[in-house]
Image (cartoon, rainbow, N blue to C red):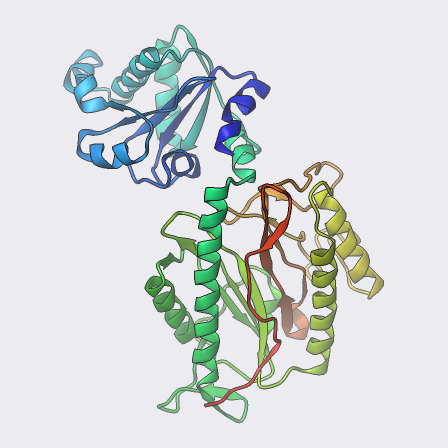
Amino acid sequence: MRSDLDALLAQRNLDGLLVLGDPRGAAMRYLTGNAYLEGAFLLKPRNGPLTLVHGNMERDIAAQTGLALINRDTAFDISQLLERHRGDRAGAQADLILQAMQRVGLRGRVGVYGLVEAGSMLALQARLRAMAEEVELVGEYGDDLFARARETKDPQELAALRQVAQATCTVVAEVQEFIQGHRARQDTVLQEDGTPLTIGAVKRFIRARLLHHGLQEDHGTIFAQGRDAGIPHNHGDPEMPLRLGQTLVFDIFPRGENGYVHDMTRTWCLGHAPEQVAAAWEQCKAAFDRVMAELAVGRACRDYQLMVCDHFEALGHPTVRSHPGTQEGYVHSLGHGIGLEVHEGPRFSHLASNTDVLRPGHVVTIEPGLYYPEQGFGIRIEDAVAFDAAGAMVPLTEYPYDLVIPLRG
């Protein structure tokens, strides 16, 4: 949580933090409450206030963040900085950042975060290091301070995630209703004009409904059929007609206007399900139900992945544990955290290096699946759940699990 920042800085032996770059970066959005502020940066000494350095034109947006503020256009002479550094914009920006650090008393070991173009960051870092006398810039790779802070959510964040979950479930219901309103000839689903209803047409409907409900498609929604459904991140062939009796993996992970995401998956068969598919779906649902029944704060996340591997291996399926790198069977880990990004901590990997334990404030997905692309099908069932401050599990994805979806058109 945001309240953990000072403790996390101390754990990493950091005297403060600097967040730079694109306002769409997760660290920037996390600290500003999803505000969009171009060219802004954030400074925080350990055990000191969080300060936002912003531009003059965005002073109203900056004020809404509730942070301590420095208006860079009134506090610093930008043209003088450029003149001092002979037009070198990286040098002028480094000078501005260092002056702002001095204003807020930020010195020593400073962690640097944010979404920045790689070349620009290299140039800026070189200038900062050449000019800084009391500052040591420190970078983290992978499991950084913000990844850990964002793992647990406060009540306000949980409310934001619940709001996005409800809107997402509404969209899924509308998509199901849209498809069910069509008719089929032989095994092909048809539109009113007699042409096939395609994956692409369904996706256009999905995008329209997402927009209507205040959701954004940050990454392409997965709506994949048959063999494509057997590749977990195959987004689906837009030209492919919907056909009866084939698996449709519908994995949707939109972002709300509040910046938070939801992630859910349903697997459908239109009209009927082949016996092999129905059996595999039942096996996935049994794994899903067992995990959901045993999820509890204080339990190691890897335990649940091991549980699912045991389940599928006993049924004769290869898993990532029994057959590392397998392209069929159970090919991925059980789930992940969600929040401002669709993939956050904690992790459910079975590897011994995974020491994550479920804690109050965690929001995670549970998504067992079976994938047999060469047999023409894939299955995944996914819900998101939260753990409140008392450690109680709160379901976020409230939508039916039906495999067979009848057409009524």
